Length: 336
Ligand code: NAD
Ligand code: UFG
Image (tube, rainbow, N blue to C red; front, side, top):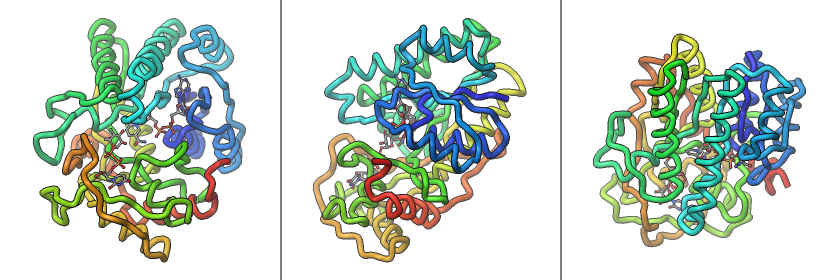
């Protein structure tokens, strides 16, 4: 079975490519390298001991995407390509809507033209907006609080409409909680551009000496230690969930949606402490005001995925921190 991976040079897409190759799937990667490096593909090929067909293509480029579908048979698509920085999306909404929404429309049209109607889509827990309570189930009301989140929500709605209009489509919406971790080889991992927005890559760069200290955003939340609580999920567990979703789609057409999380949350201070343990260092931090727009707690009820996909996260906090540290300490400057 051949899977087209859009955004396959990125953090999650490169791990998906590796896991698929390890399980004997064929993959084709499409990425415009706007937020990634071709070296990630080379390392996936090295780890899998198989060549990885790679096309440097923007998914909005219909002719180039059409050409990709002509060069290799494709059975299904895992769609990771997208811009994902929340703050940036507030300042550049049109860029986000064009890249994420227009890109997805072109992809769906080209898929249709080539008779490919199986799609696994990277959605996000951000589609739950500011959740009224935790844990979050898939039936919670959906909303968005920034253009990035709105782009995910619109794409979900668009895919629902498409499946209603053309019932032969098979679509899985996978709502990720907080992906973290890296392949245990330490050869591929998350390599954010500039100063990281997200907690774990920030801690990792403090641990490796690139940044002086972590700012803990908010210490007066109604949580066990006053800091924000999130559901951090190991990227390898996350990509295994995609393969299980693909198997589910093979059983019949329709649209399904799943939370991919661990079902438990850790606070910012717990993350800093766990990372310090993994790295064998004390991570320097300072207490800072809340970051606007952050929820106190966001963690999943992941029981639907367990029930219907036979999937659950098996890697814990210490595995995640150990694997991020291996990646970060072996590659202090990422792929550069
Ligand atoms: P990433 O930036 O590392 O990977 C995305 C990849 O898509 C990059 O390699 C980028 O170059 C590519 N890309 C972007 N626009 C493109 C276009 N128009 N054409 C071709 N390639 C394009 O991000 P990631 O963390 O691997 O995230 C993958 C997906 O998962 C994204 O859609 C993201 O929104 C979603 N997601 C991520 C998180 C997270 O915390 N990492 C959480 C929820 C959802
Ligand atoms: N935090 C800090 N200091 C930092 C960075 C983050 O204290 O330097 C805190 C935040 O306040 C929050 C927690 O660490 O309490 C996690 O923050 P992240 O930025 O790592 O992650 P978020 O939960 O805010 O957001 C992530 C993705 C979003 C996605 C959301 C839900 O970045 O794109 O998960 O899936 F929408």
